Figure 1 (cartoon, helix red, strand yellow):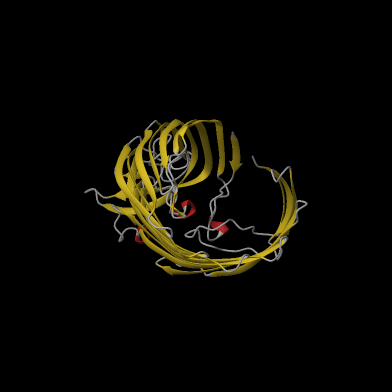
Figure 2 (tube, one colour; figure 1 turned 45 degrees about the vertical axis):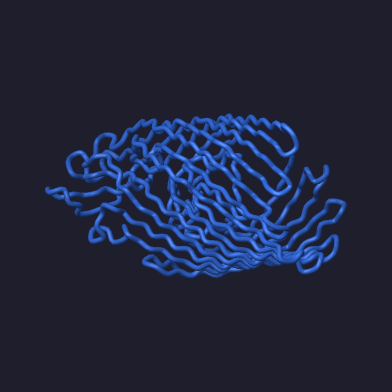
Length: 465
């Protein structure tokens, strides 16, 4: 069960760009999961997972912006202009997922095979209104009043083989084949009842090598097909190869560009894990993420009176390359400390395929940014259950490309304290975040944990089972 309400919760480089009129509500009830695990004999396991979910998402925004495409008598595009509408939107998603998996395990190898089918009906209502006095009066009354019910279904079969080649070398091989049918556009009004189909075979492989008892080298590469709503989140299929995540709903940050359904994804990574003595751990890793896909954006097409409902295609190509250095030290049984440094470069190319750049220069845009992040922390964990932690977080972002927001650099400092009990199943904690009371401007082309924009007190009670 989930009941969620908010305003515009997307990340922006400048909060002034966020909507002050948008209101969002989302209810998820019920969310049902049924699992079964059968052990036939040691090393032979059969697993089954079935789920049902009901999700209702509502959005109201009297300041919603929709592009209107102007055409001349010959049909050529002569202009693209933003118009303001009063949006009333609701999407009801009802669906199920079923997956069967078989595991065979011996001393040297593990074989995993399975199949998964997912289906959902996406009932979408979208109404766009304008004030009766709004100029120019070139729209119907209302301009858009749509009810569409496209389907989403996805079928996947997969197989994985983990094999201990030698005492020091472990190999990981896998592949998945899947087909996906999904709505063309139920997210960006005016919406569409059309559906798209995509199919892909995705190879995956990895290696883990331990030349020394305290040294581990890892490498992995995988392809995958991005999700639309829930389809990448509910699964038994393995989600890692040699310690690298290979299953994302979206590699492209949704705050930067929104949902990109059915994107083709490439993931590669290498890592060196080193234990320096019994209490010190060091990791150096590099990763490459790539996402390529297309979607449709809702527009009005002013080729005749009244303006027609339309959709225009957009291509998005996203890449992130990152380097991570992590250091952790257990000082004694009570105290610990550590530091992380991450350097990442991200680029996003967006193209409105049917709109000439002479008409809309920003339709084809390139954004590039480099983000330096440092996290330092130290804390205490007492056997009685008391714990405390202090941390400093540094972010510095610089920009290139055709769109170049201002650079940003900031430190934030946080303090936490709390108590764990019931064999660590329960936790009470309180903290002060952003002690220096510093705001920031980070572009969401990079994924980053949401930071408080002012000095914030937080309290939490958590149960873990």
